[in-house]
Length: 482
Image 1 (cartoon, one colour):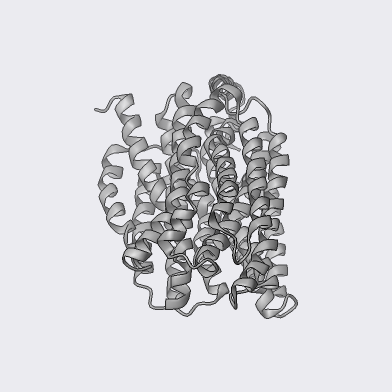
Image 2 (image 1 turned 60 degrees about the horizontal axis):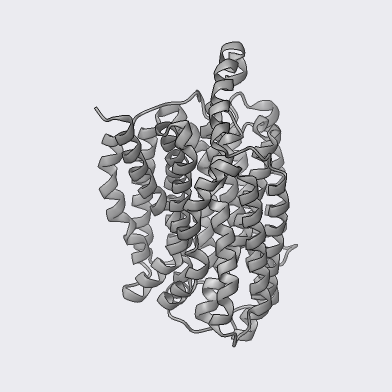
């Protein structure tokens, strides 16, 4: 029988490896986009869906994945999600055209939607409260590391082999950790008893309609039958989803009562806008380094490291620091630095800008991203009861991934409205206003972070919260399962 320490180590090793692999696919494709565009003859819309098919499916199904884990067993669903993600990766590598690739990316998103929220839930259950800040900070650093090396790994693989291998690389990793997931993780279940199918359908179709309209807007015309009706119908369905979750669902996939917590609401608002600015900007900047500055995929990936590589240095320190000072100052400071960095890049980019001129702005953005990544998970979990941590984790992951989806869609729309791929000057003409839009979104996120309660994320908070919850369970059990 494993000791609690060995169980914690094995849980961290398995869940962090899976988290790294699935998170890597958010950005590993960015430096491969020019190669995919050329090889599969894809336009901007096809490239956007290559990224968004993964992130949108991932975001919409995250809450369902978390619920399935709560009902049928977290280890069992974690293993199933890992298998689906691995199979989707193999399908993406075999894609003969952009349609197949987009479909395979959606399958990857299904697997990741089950896999990623359960990494945090499984790890949280295996870690004592007094060590949560440090361990969850390390978990956040792993996710940050995946973001950091995503463009670099993608560039290295495309240069050394081909773009297909950015997907093949997941297959042996997934196969290798499957037996450890089955034998080393402890099975557990939550309080969920049924799936919220109406909520899932309303959210999925509504968000798909809105994103479809935004992605197609510039190419088809914002009032065309293929753009305006999907956006309007999507907005109506999202409103219907909120109404259903508030009044109709017996077991809502997104309990609206969680948003009564100011910490939960403000942290998720900040996450949404942070990913909006970050993902949309990286989507375009990774292409800028190749299309405009003519770097190879590997050279472009290396040149993003002053930005994306910063979490490797800063996030573990910030995670430990959040135990002492709480998450609010770190989140607000990080978001402000990210906004400053994106605005700085918007001022600098030109067809002939020397790369070294971009490095300070990349570094400022990277430092800001690092300060955000480390404490955000702990702040979210500290804002809800322990019995609600699984659904809160899924909600936070879903909301931030939706931020990435809308960041790529909206910044891509801004880019195509003002520029394009016709020339270096045309690309920069679209990139500059897109970066300003990203900076504005992250600046609003910083304002939201200031409103987070100061105590959230401190180690003592988790201990006190656990004691209060035990008392509440004895006095008001129906309130915990409603």
